[in-house]
Amino acid sequence: MAKYLEISETLKQEILDGKYEKEGKIPTEYELVSRFNVSRQTVRQAIGCLKNEGYLYQVQGSGTYVSKPSRQNRKSGKSSQTVMVICTYISDYIFPSIIRGIENKLSSNGITINLVATGNRVDVERRILQKILSEPDVDGIIVEGTKTGFPNPNIALYREIQKLEIPIIFLHCSYPELTNTVTVGMKEMEGGKYGITSLVSLGCRKFGAIFKSDDRQGLLRYAGFCDGLLDSGLDLDSAIVRWYTTEDVDREKDNLANRILYDFGKEDGVVCYNDQVTLAFINAYKVADRPLPKLFSFDKSHISDIFPPEVISIGHRKEELGVVAATKMINMLDGKKEESIFLSWVL
Image (cartoon, rainbow, N blue to C red; front, side, top):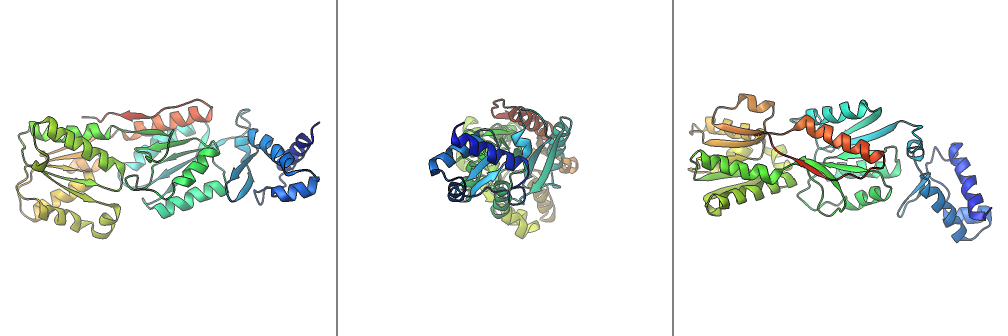
């Protein structure tokens, strides 16, 4: 037997015996060269064999680590599997329905989920991704990206996870910097275009709009909004558009709608990023004792149940989106290739 195969078998047995379980990291190349009295190339061949078999993975600049047993035994189906679900928020707004769809589908297939939230903060996202890389105890990741509308400093970490061949599915939007990603989301541009054409069909000719700038959903809805204006024969200057970020909401909450409302004048139709923003606008109009314009909103969440008749809210396919994402993850865990899909809004 070739020397590198002997070393490979020795290390494999030590891995199976749990020798490296506490640290999760095998000795360095230099230490293995000294231990087995072989060349560095021979050690690298042995490590390469174990990587190909799923027993080891490497993190650039950190070292070589032992893979989780379920990843080692995935093909034989000897171990249960775990999928990490990373959301921006867990208990807020539409996310419980999405999570319910994911959990029901995965659990019915014997897959456990670990649920964490970033609060739409890149520093929290970074800590979560670093933990995955240092302790790779997950078989797949379903993630709603953090601030997908801005350049993200965590792209390199996502690329490292991709190198480990841990399947990743993005909810709503991916990062433009990443290639070959699978995304399950809504047709955001289609929704934005429908917003303006709906208001035009109701006789509106002067528009206001507010979109979220730090998530790509807001950028895409705005792009569709502009297409709708132009397709309706209206100039772009017929609309006043304002933007907000996650921090704006965190800092101002009730004052945000009032501040934007101050910029609006005689608009007879307003497109809002989602039902939460729409509700803030409705309350601001009431307090200011101004006649409510026709409003268009996204998501048709539980909040929309209290909207007056002047408001149109198109439906986000929340639980269905979660089920689709989970189904694709199951297929990817089985080694099948998957592609992105974007669902139409419920009009």
